[in-house]
Amino acid sequence: MTTVLAARAMCPPGPPAPGWLAIEDGIVVELGPGAARPGPGVIDLGDALLAPGFLDLQVNGIGDVDFATTDADGWGRADRALLDAATTGYCPTFVSAPLDAYEPALARARAARERSDAILGVHLEGPFLGNAPGAHPRHLLRPVDLDWLEHTVDAHAGLIALVTLSPEVDPGGGAIRLLADRDVVAALGHSTASYDDARAAADAGATVVTHLFNGMGGFHHREPGLAGAALVDDRLTPTLIADLVHVHPAALRLAIAAKRSVGLVTDAVAVDDRGFAVVDGAARQPDGTLAGSTLTLDRAVANVAALGVPIERAIEMATVIPAEVLGVRDRGRLAPGARADVVALDPVSLAVRTVWLAGERV
Image (tube, rainbow, N blue to C red):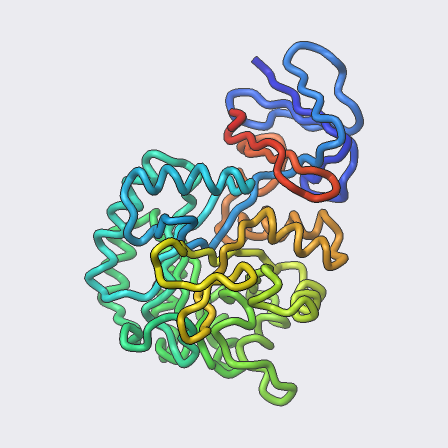
């Protein structure tokens, strides 16, 4: 049976305009402008804003669920909580740990992925990080171990989607080239790399800069560093934590205006029983160091739109851009042939009203 969703505004992407989309067997089969004809299977969503499901490239946990350690029940609860926030696809993120801790965590992630097609692939953030560790314990950071990285990526082919590392611990860019050769996204972060070193990393195949402005050397007009490269090098897509704590609104506006390819991430962490203090929606260690956020992507989109960014641009940063980063063609947009991962938002507050995952209302 065909289901048709119709609303007064739709960003498939593009500026919001009245439209409808038809779904069959979990796939979008047709889109059209204006109002849908009344009939069987037509759901009129009134003044709702329809958009693709949001995609989060960096989420460490949510509520009491830490993806690196949780069990099957925790993965299921996290899936449901993320869906409530319009996130229909995500990269569970494992932060720096001893090398022998990754194998059991990756095995659990693989099992979880067999149960949930919302998991797009694992993001390893560390332990090959440099001189801007942030909340990553310094004693766990280390230079790149190419043998370990090659073995781990090959043993979990198709599961590891993205690896954040620092140019200063990957001399010559060998790890970046290894990842690029295996179609794993290489991201730069937690680094005080120079502008030239960041550009050299892009030459080697890096394509992302993890949480721009956070965990990196500051921008200076004579030493633009990694942040400067992220803003001007078209090969690099910077991501932003738009909780209005990690990055000042003025810096958010600057980055969003600098280039099209800027994505939103939450960098959300589990806070229950983790010893973090939550201040203004951000998790902090006892010494005040930012340790991640409690952000969800629906709030990130609303925060960006509240800065005066057009709503279609804010939605693009949580849908089209992350899909392009991962090379995923069937998500991040409403188009014939795409998965019917659809969200209905309040047109004013952008609060989530309804979510469809592969055409099923959840």
